[in-house]
Length: 491
Image 1 (cartoon, rainbow, N blue to C red):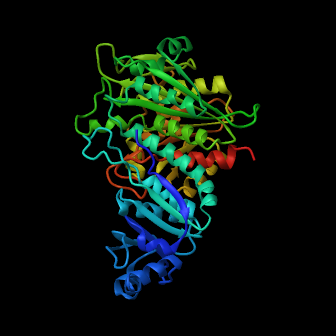
Image 2 (image 1 turned 90 degrees about the vertical axis):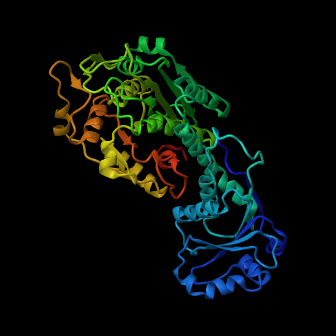
Image 3 (image 1 turned 60 degrees about the horizontal axis):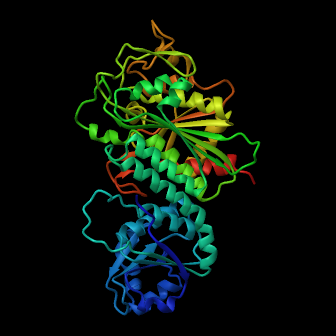
């Protein structure tokens, strides 16, 4: 498992710049105004920053970018990183600037002279988010500990206290990335459940429901997905009770297909290796629950994840089979590669029956169709409740996590009609992500506010993002944490 870059908070002392080693970052505005540390570094380096500011190239530098001066004269640092930053910043802009510093530092020791900078906590969060590495399966060539980042502030104790809940969220993001990045031979259903169970140590109540428990509960659609695999199907239940005892919880439900071959409706070989990330929804739920526990959120939240593996075998479910859900509705299986909704429908129904939640949000890498519609910039958002949906969209926007609302409607629902059962598990190619959401909505009880998040396009990407190297992004942890803070947390 990865760990956060070690971050140390220290006094802001520009006089000590000459003796600092590693990389040192100072702040300059786009207009060329230097703060105290930058002026000191400029004097030590015999006017290097001033010459940079006066150059034609500086006019093209935008806020949030970093210009590096290597081996500056008069300093022991190997690089002087000039962070160009406007005085007025949004939190996301400050985080992107911090992430840029972390990317430039590339794991080297870094001291950031923030002084009394506005949004210094968000800049620190950006450093923590971008400082992620997943190297668990690389043969070690360097056993040196990870380089420390020092944040030099005029009131370091206050900044450290402000950063604490933000770094707790970063811990949750890193956990989600680790889970999504793991290969399926490592992150089996049993290993996933074990990692969730370990979170008892941070105050979560954790319960692992085994196949015998699921059979008693009638979770037949979930069990049907995993029946072709040697890995046992499970449901993990995480509870964080930080709010009032009588307050109904928010329920987060995640799809945890640890590997998806498509089952009998076998996927093409090309790209199948990416299906290790088909448990992305469960990964976000686990990471969010970790973040809430670490920052001791004053809210009641329950996280439930269905953990299965979808494999072809002599015991696998077949196209044409009919399975009865925990709710009691029957489902005609048209395509065994539309398995995520079969997992979610039972867990959604169980979550409502057991916890009587104030609202339900499910997350899943559910459809390729959502990638065709929204690419890799936005998750698809489907909801039966405008107030809850708008609150989530506001939270996602505040955290810089792309999300776009998609429609629901009876015409889409009609595509799920079956000749021999209550519904089919697919509605054909048209509007594939919408009919998947319509399928799930059938398992939402009357009056329960609900959001479905299709994160197939945002859970894992092929190139670096602002806050993560290519691979797992951890999308959703920050947005859900913000939603809990804004709408469900007690004052």
